[in-house]
Image (tube, rainbow, N blue to C red; front, side):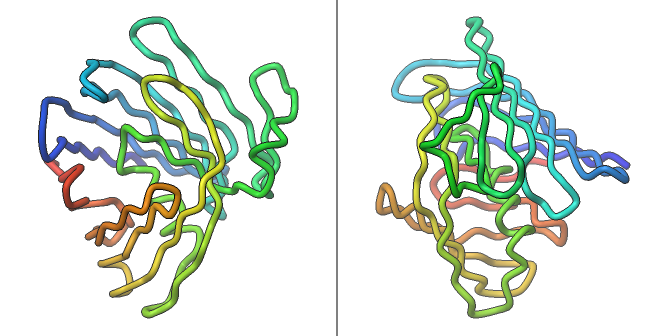
Length: 182
């Protein structure tokens, strides 16, 4: 089964087209994104492979300028680079957050399954696009309204946004950054 989602930035130029598939082995998200970051235009494609428990297992990113990044996870907080070498700085990170997309907010929303009123602090592998730098960062999610609204806190940059999501956990509105087009 496949779902299609598109987002546009709230300001500036850009768009994302995502295809989300589910199967017996879990889920996959594959997308193309174009946009601007820090005054520089970029184009990228990414694929995220997700286990049935919503833990990330593989992330691959390719920029149109030739840059690539591949990460592998065991789903329990241990990460490897594409040469299968451990990335100890990411120990404890279950989720990934790609700066170019609201899709990666779906991962902890679905994985955590928070009841209304509950807040959960998490550590994620944050990938900046287009630089392809990766670092561990602290974030928090609070369920405001089950399966509809979540407070996202980017603790590492003192940022908060109240995210509206659909029944599948896909972001519909990410104030100041993204909004759903389709």
